Image (tube, rainbow, N blue to C red; front, side, top):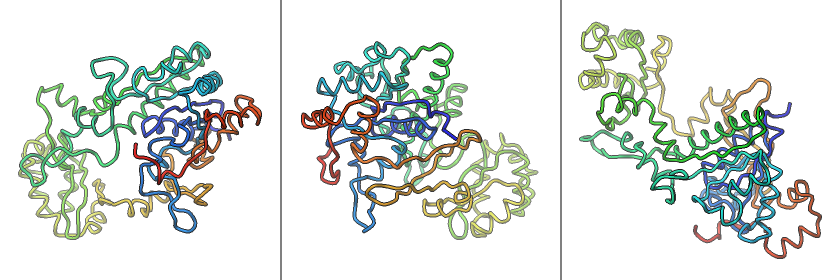
Length: 419
């Protein structure tokens, strides 16, 4: 069965992570995604290696692992839109598309006639999603925005890391570019909402998404802790500001996570660890009291948790309905029985590596399931096919564009200049 978005064409002018992540989600849902890249260079992340994908002989290909994470189910077309003919090609593609995604600096595409106003003139039903660091207005609008900068500026790093006074204390970024990923998710949600609106009215619209806005919005309960009390939350390491015990604890062979979400779970935990008096103690019986007395309770739990291995504790706590688990590295993640059962690792044919392992989409839909049609493309892999099929150009016209440098071919990114 065709994907839910199999009738939709996306023109993806974005690069790095937030925009490509949104484009990949739409591609997984069935959309045709045409990724426009710079001839000879392409998406910045193509050069963000090592590591690179290995070929059948164990040698590096030109495909960086970073690039592979966000560009499945796309067609790569190389067009130099600093040239007038290149701009005309992109406008023609936009005229035949439903969605444009771009993440250039504010106003950058206007000089090429590829801004929303210009493209809406040729396609009034176009949904145009701009992703920037700080949005289209405000004092920071002209600045470049990167995930790491936004994690700091937007407050996430102030909440992440060991608390003051502990060894290694200090702000810490999250281990993946989470702000970019969350922005990609918000972008895809916004685009789907705009499609629903267009279905009713026929009108396209402009979407202004900022990494900073997304980062601030996604601080969730910590935002409300501050807005409700006026007290600035601080770093608590792996502990939770509103729930106790809800953090990591040492075991005899490593560490485990306890995620006790209510008082009945805490009472069952106390029974399993043979400390029933904790559940009766007025300092610990209710979550609000446990939060107030965490400095007393947490050391008591630590003294107990070190008496068994992680596996032993999980085997005792899980049957009792106490949420707990190990702290896995990625090798263990992809070996985990549940992860394997859910098919979170997939493999697709790849033109230079034979096959490429990728992470599956988490979306499960009963009527229009996610499709895995093709691996992340080589640079310019589909240029000729798209120009012929979508724009109707013949081989003579395409050859002329190639000779004049309006369209290009791929390169080996291991030798590409630093960006």
